Image (cartoon, rainbow, N blue to C red; front, side):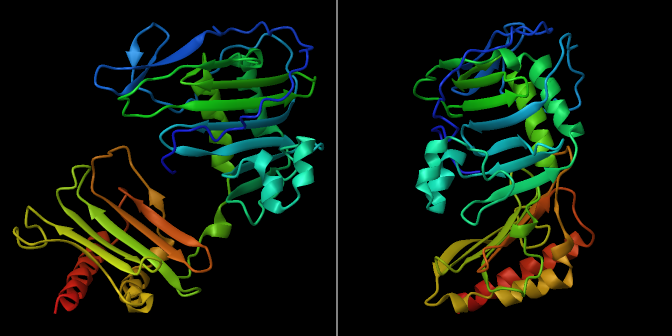
Amino acid sequence: MGLFSMLFGCTKKPEQGESNNASANVNHNNTVDEIIVTDDGIRADIDDGGVMVRPDRGDYADEEMPEITVETAALEELCLNCTGTAREPYYMIKSDGNGGYYLKTTWTAPENLPYELGVEDEADSGDIYKYVSDVMDCEHGSSVHLTDAERVNKVRDALYAYGAIDWDGFDEHKSLGDGVLDGDRGFTLKFRLADGKSVYAHGYNRQPKNFEKVYSIIIDLIDGTADYSRYVEKDFHASVMDGLFVEFKDSFACRQYFKIELNSAWKRWSIQVRDPWGELLDRDFEISDYGDVKDASELPYDRFVAILDKYNVSDWEDSSASDYGAPSYNIRLTFENNKSFEAGGNLLPEKYNEFRREILDEIIKYYDELKK
């Protein structure tokens, strides 16, 4: 996700009507989570005990929720967007009116979609959920239809259990000041329940208590059901390849590092080879170079695709274990049909070492040809 520090959320605040529900009697402490800065310039948060901790959105999807002591109403619609050093999509939930729900992710602001579609007059309606049941050609995202409410009800329960139904009107901002290395962070959340209760909350470097728990449960549901298959190309010969990136790392330290990148748009190749331990190459052998070609057709995609085919890389997936310092790989391919393929992580596939060896040999062979 790109490096953006400004908010891309549903930032136009709607007219606030009177709430027809009293605050729910649930077990929560609806105070504010404050984001502050440590002495070394990294943002940190305040935990329940007032102790400064590093920001960690965590995974609360399996955590037992506080008891809900009031009658709950069904969730009708919800839109969540968060931004910080990394831009995130808009997460949307909308009832289909028949007991099911549409779950959508999109990187296009829902209120801007009518303009993207050339139907500007629809923007005045304020209905950001009109296109929730599908992904338009001008969007990048996912839309999935659930025929029952079972999984969405967990989100509904989280809104009650963690006090989100009391967040309406939350609108607090705080500047982190200059020298913050981790960037600002904001959120916008709005939702409506079947009993008419509606909530709009917005924060910039400040957020309601338990926000991260509600956030985690929402994205666990939507990301866990998202379908991006329309953007994935597993037939490496179905369209012209216009980008290739393959890298191998020994760990986060990247002391041993091998990379080849080909980019048709820039008509450029880039190569890095470093093996200080002499595991696969001489210890003093190193390449760190890039260059341009006159025509993109000169870039040798076919040589590397032949190796990808040999090892059935199209069947590989993104996968990571808990040992984030372990050796890892990353493969990204892009095609002229606007589809792409990605695989990587530190759960290494079968015959990984042989695959890495062949790619490395081909990188060095190609570089030698370039320098003749």
